[in-house]
Amino acid sequence: MKKDKMVHRVGKKEERTAYLCLIPAFLGLTLISYLPTIAVFVLSLFKWNGISAPKFIGMDNFTRIFTKDIYFTDSIKATIIYALLTVLGSILYSLVLALFLNMNIKGRTLWRSIFFIPYLLPAIGVFTGWKWLYEINYGLFNFANRLLGLPPKEFLQSPTQVLPSLALIAIWCSGNLIVIFLAGLQGVPRVFLEAAEIDGANAWQRFMNVTIPSISPIIFYNILTALITNLQVITPALALTNGGPQNGSMFMSYVIYMYAFKKNKMGYAAAYASIFFVFVGIFTIILFKTQKSSLFGEEDD
Image (cartoon, rainbow, N blue to C red; front, side, top):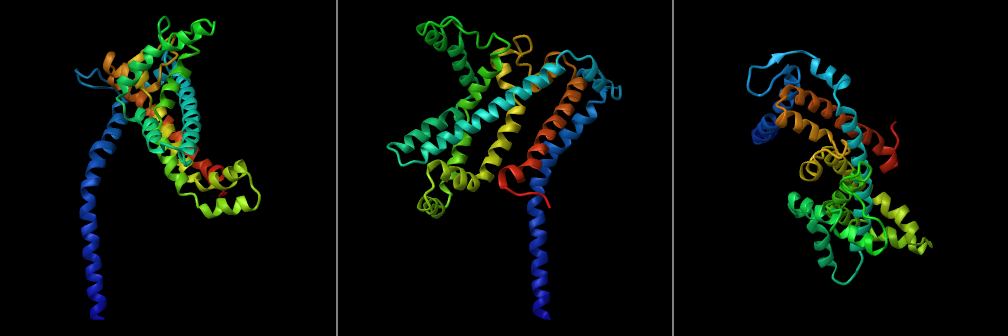
């Protein structure tokens, strides 16, 4: 009995120590994430320019966004199309490269470093470099078009070409996904691949029936992180397009920035941010709801 009481006291002491160690993390999350998020929702109910006293207007900001805002529809369209192009392209690109880099090839470490470097480069440097590549008169891509006898393309000046052009930059910078896929591929049990090969499965069948099921959690994680990241895109619009041409790259994050810091409509921008928060949450929930059947092969009970 005495021993049980001693064990119980030790357990209680360890529990108190664990809670004390969690306090800094909890305070950090509260001050950096939870309170600012709540403040945004509260501020969305006010009219405020950042200088004068806030004026409570209820749901007027939301009503105006849904009925009169000239950027709302275009921003949703641009954000969804860009996110879909980027997520699909980056997942395929990074998976193919990870498969290549997982092979026993000469200079494998060097190749891994080369493909990871774009992810480490400063964003402004990356977009400045690609701006030169896309330049209509002297850019490398249009120089190649002229050599092939093709007309020059307005990559960043065309409403139909701007989103694929910006998505290509994001795909090129997806070195983090390559590293995660590579780690997942190295964890695929060799015994399963060897057993499938003995049973007569070719390379494609081994890939579809052994490799893909084994790395399905990695695929889900990469899709989730890529989706959330690219739905919140703003850097391309800031660095290259300013939301143009013809609102073709008017992403929701850029609209929030524009209203808050260019037009000083803090309350209106907060309402936009609240809608955007729900918007990203819906996509995340949909992905989580579909992941069991589509990625893990499981069905809800």
